[in-house]
Length: 147
Image (cartoon, helix red, strand yellow):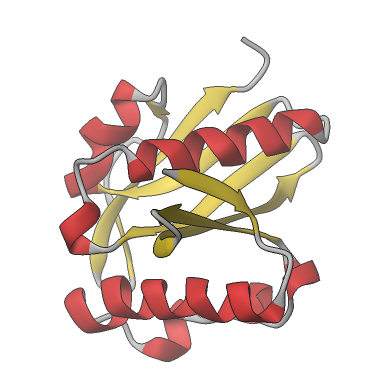
């Protein structure tokens, strides 16, 4: 199992296919909400791809939220690979990447069903109540990257 920063258009398209399968097909998120301005190019934000035996199975991205804070987003793992550590690997890879670029904090908007997953990775819920994003309940979570 590996994860890496997306460097080619082909890899970016593989990440989009995973995200579309998870968010658009499974969760019924409209494609125009899933694919946004941060997906316009490889340079629009930091995209990541996870693979098992060379097969792309997970995707994610992060972008600057504010100076010193990275926002992790669009963390998607194909259904048959959930529970195998792919999601954890993607999150940890993004955290290391952001920290190496000088970011001290990461935030993310977790689907409420995934809140416990992120808590196990060291995230703390900072929103006072759940909010809707694409019709799905989320909470905002945060973690220090300096530890």
